[in-house]
Amino acid sequence: MDDHPDPGPGPGTDLPIVVGVDGSEPSLRAVDWAADEAVLRGAPLRLVYASLWERYEGTSLADDLDKPSEQVRAEDIVDAAARRAHSRRPDVKISTDVLAEEPEYALVRESRSASVLVTGTRGRSGLAEALLGSVSLVVAGHAQCPMIVVRGDRDDQDRTGPPGRVVVGVGEKPAGSAAVRFAFAEARRRGVQVEAVRAWRRPAHESTDHALMAGEPARPHERQAADALDAALQDVPADVASGRRTVEGHTRSVLVDASRDADLLIVGARRRSGHYGLQLGRVAHGVLHHSACPVAIVPEEG
Image (cartoon, rainbow, N blue to C red; front, side, top):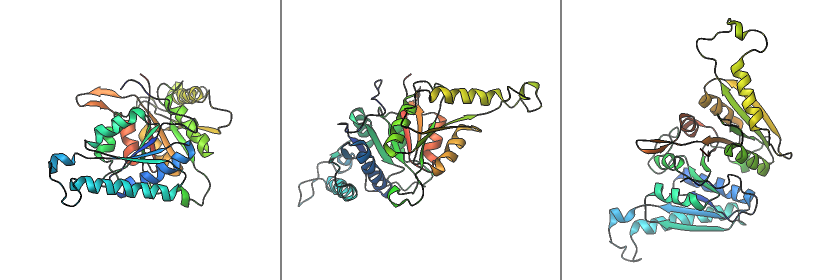
């Protein structure tokens, strides 16, 4: 999982947008979101259902269809999702697949040949809405293309207010960031502003009474955050409107707050190895669980 596709393929890409579906309402909302994204990208849509039904049903067959009953239900689910996507976006090319394997492994493999991988917040397990489904969380830690988890309850087709914006969290290595490039591309497709956000915190041992914190240059930590935003936005395309904001506070809280009136929140992921394989950092975990809008996790090099 060392090779990452370009995070911002242009219009008319042959790489599909892959959506993991399971019949749950969150996965159907992911289908809606992905269908809209397919129009923006000029990309085909691929709907995938994965389950190890053979583990539970063996070789027993449905009497009238000569198929395991779970497979029959899976095919019904992807067919219904395809009809929903076609009804919403009739011009999008749609394909479906039913895979007899663990959904986590199937979706990670699908990410190797996808422009974007899309999932809902949770599946049929019925977890609380504030929690992210285990499949999405595992896949987010391993996907090789940008992965978007559709959070929030706003439908862009029903929006009556002004357009939102794309928010990107700027990390420790802002120059050449794949997440920032992805944000530029998404903002251009939507015709909205990209806002780069960098959180900063003053160490507890420093106070506003400290000599270094008075006058100019004041707040060196805030200045460092502003410098990071300058580096991140140095290559912003001329046709993309951009803004920047430094906020004192915990990065997770700052980004969740920024998501409340955004179309999409984007964070980069430099995964680390642990006892249980690749893991996301705390910031990615936090926004995946609590963002008010869809979240894109973009693999970063290194």
